[in-house]
Image (tube, rainbow, N blue to C red; front, side):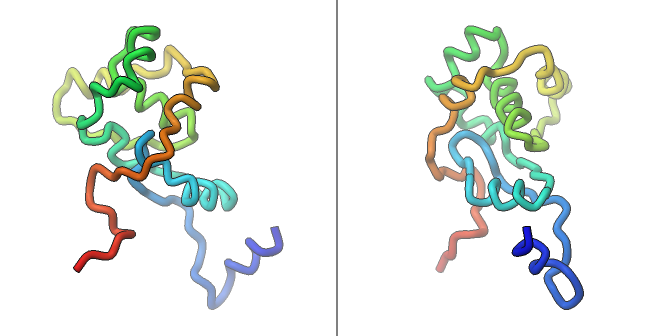
Length: 132
């Protein structure tokens, strides 16, 4: 804890209260998540639905069937159970309502683990990668 105290204070970088990163099963960013959790930083997950590009993944199908939920709902539930504040994007009223209907089920520890792909596959521009 002493090392964390040395990061803050006058002349230091300041206090981060909230951080926002692209987070989903194909981009778990455990390094960033652990760093933030250690410091009590709220984690906002943008693009938690992977821009809709992975809603038909085999990885999600057993959970969709078991819970009778959409792939988007499974991904949002994963995000919530990870302790993230998911930021799904939609302009469709039906999808917005569906996205809010994720509090009547919970994924088991094994199911959460099954969604840990260990992959690093951003769906949007990754500012941590240098480009020419």
